[in-house]
Length: 79
Image 1 (tube, one colour):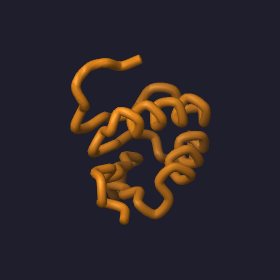
Image 2: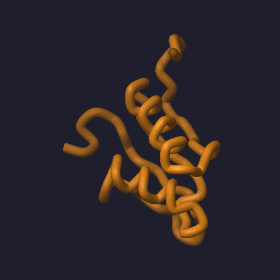
Image 3: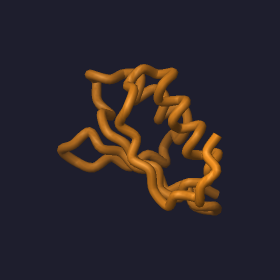
Image 4: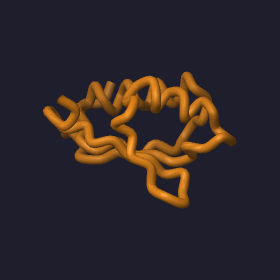
């Protein structure tokens, strides 16, 4: 279990299977990370798309022309 200070940002680009991404997202949200970003939001990696969309829905921001995604996870950002 992580015991360090709360990160302001994480960039998720490790496992691309659904379960791996869910695990990373679980950690980031439970740690209170304010900006959660990642890579490989593309048809080549359907597990990434599924996990990110299930967790964040229409809050996901995509950077045009890339497979990078981000979510503002600060308290109140999605009220």
